[in-house]
Length: 340
Image (cartoon, rainbow, N blue to C red; front, side, top):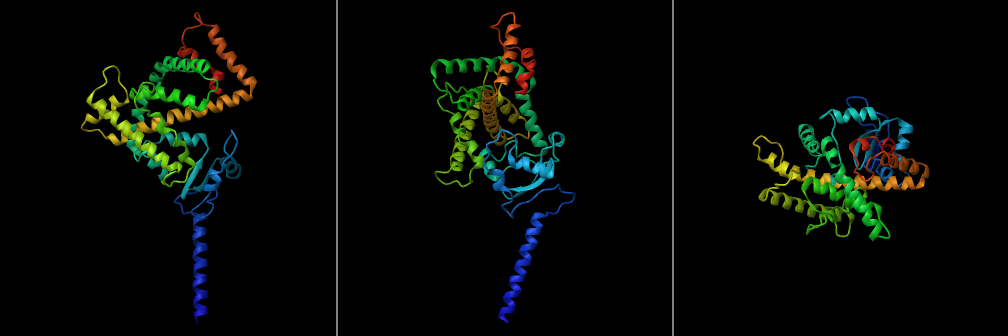
């Protein structure tokens, strides 16, 4: 009798497990799911997604599935069922149609970048904060920043030439871009400030590939601590600006303080600080990485480097004054530079 009961329990267990695995690999949907593989239950295809690679091209994880399933496929990463789109037309529609799609990041990243950052906001609140950013760094603002960027880049390169035998390009570019962004957005002077806001951001990229365990000595712990320190500094700077308004120019903090005074505003101090935190990080990290890759690839491709150099020298040659600053028209004429 006991033997029959054990066999029955084992059979039920195997059937239930098989059914669970089947449902995992074939999730229900009101519409039609794209092709793909959900990988192992719970784990999904997380290990394949985070596997290191040495290519400058599309990551193998994406490239292999595009060949197998097409430009849109389903998978599971870090316990979440997701649809991956590499179709440019669909991606354009996704970004244009507010509220129909929901962006998602692991909880470990949300804890570092804040629960109210731009990537987690949805619907009208997301549209509101996005428009707020565009008002600060929109087309006209970028045109006006051109001379500042050129001046900062020229000064930095001259300093590298005269005082440094070896330049760590990514770190140097990150400092350059962070200094420009922080000065423009919150009037923060990296060179003359008593507290170094920049150093609190150093470990953040490691959170993307680290195990989210906040114990002493782990990368994730360093990210969380850096996040708290940076957020505290930003909060103190906002409070200082509230007490001593900036009379010389208008920046992000001035805009935030004016918005918070309005009775019908949907903006909160938490959203404003999380947004500033994300903007500072995203601006310098993406740009410094792109510059590092660009210089590496140009070094490996002398023909491309020559064409890039020729385009810039032609612009200088056509100037009435070779030492005059870069104009918006010259910037827009750099067709090959944009391809680089």
